[in-house]
Length: 406
Image 1 (spheres, helix red, strand yellow):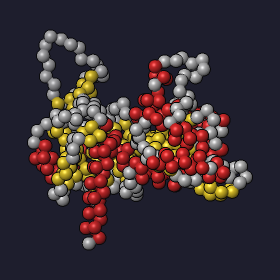
Image 2 (image 1 turned 180 degrees about the vertical axis):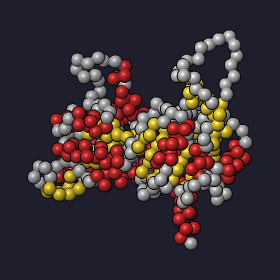
Image 3 (image 1 turned 90 degrees about the vertical axis):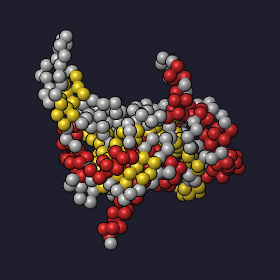
Image 4 (image 1 turned 60 degrees about the horizontal axis):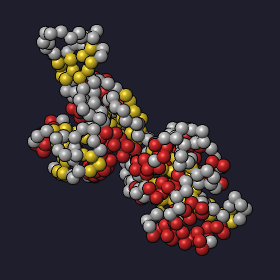
């Protein structure tokens, strides 16, 4: 999930750097927006180094920079891609702007433009915090659905004692989790996951592949990391960013993917096979580019290893999840695969269904569990589907633990 962190101009701004790291450790992708005043306390370069992303400090191109349409509507793009706007520290000034709908900088404009949930963690002098204007602004914001993480009490930078210190990281992160409904029910689990297509070489410039984008597998990897798991993602070629908190191993071919899985499976307690692995590869790859001629050619293929079946044959207490992309008889084929592959859960979908095809942001799947439970899901975003899959994984894991205890 993506969090936009707004940093405003107060002494506590330096604590936002530590908060970025904590959010990343929780599996969130963080993008930082700073007010001009915040830049007086900590530099944008600090946050750019921590996040690896551009830090936004103004509505328009910097002085002397090239103005363009992208910079003019950037607040709309950020508003649309963020899952949560977190402002920490939030000064009395920015609370007043949010409350009254004033949008004279990037952060206040972003607040008006986004439909994502908003969390603010105020930090200021105790008298400013207790002032009726500040309390009235907070009341207005809460009535609009803004979540407030109240400041701590203690010694303040101004030398006074009282409420106004930025809340601790644990309190802020707990609120973020609650608002985003992120659970930590996979802590202690090691998840090995495959995603994306494979590429099987015909010659040095051509290969056989499929239409998988890897989005579904990456969504599951991101969700598992957010829920506390240690995640290793064995990925075929994709253009997707590595999710926060996930270790990625890059491969191209099915054989390479199998070797990477075997090298990393030992510590895995859960193995999820979402990759679209090519069933066949050319029996021989040409050493040089095959030249086009008028003659027909016959391409001889040989089967690739079945990664899911190979791991499942010696799974032990490991929970195994497979994926099945079908074009007909979805339930029948999924149940057959569940049994033949010795899996605990099969995630099946009809790739011809609306909203369930390749390279789209949604999916329509049904879950088929070893214990006989069938769970058809409506069209959802792939992120939502990922969490529903992991809900079922948690349920099955609990069932296995219960049976072991008996």
